[in-house]
Amino acid sequence: GAGVSQSPSNKVTEKGKDVELRCDPISGHTALYWYRQSLGQGLEFLIYFQGNSAPDKSGLPSDRFSAERTGGSVSTLTIQRTQQEDSAVYLCASSLTRVALLEQFFGPGTRLTVL
Amino acid sequence: SQQGEEDPQALSIQEGENATMNCSYKTSINNLQWYRQNSGRGLVHLILIRSNEREKHSGRLRVTLDTSKKSSSLLITASRAADTASYFCATVFTGANSKLTFGKGITLSVRP
Image (cartoon, rainbow over all chains, first blue to last red; front, side, top):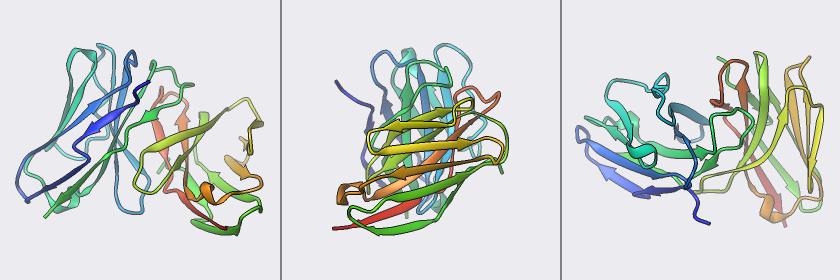
């Protein structure tokens, strides 16, 4: 079956521009997560959606970052007025529910480069 | 920081040898998970161990958890060149629902 997909796979943008990153979770997965991975670093939690509940935005680094999840499925992470320090791989993951004992399935990531 | 810390940061072994990777954390956990990341790819879940478990096996993988020492180890037996990847431990802290906190990872190189 289809896994988590993300688009684009690579994005190069100029400082100050806005970017949108897309995530298609596995069908039926109600929980969706966004992480950021900088070069040589672990994953930094950004935001978490669970069904119709209010998202957990506690990991968003600034108000330039926002995310939506429409219809409980596809999610879009938007970064406004990009800065060079936003350059990283942005990973999306989904799981069946918010229950802590379930593994997360990761997409291949979007590599964002801000020039 | 609640972030898990892996040790060593990098490990290079010969094919056929065993690889042992360690992870330590600071606060009480619900469970601990190990993930693998091949270069340029997403993460793949390997194994999950609950806080009330001490050891789990999955194929060539063996994970131990010592909650008194707040540490876990991942053992890969009879390593293969295809095991070359980065390995991350991720913890779900008590009360954090399913939010994973990742360490910085261990780079494992298995020489053929």
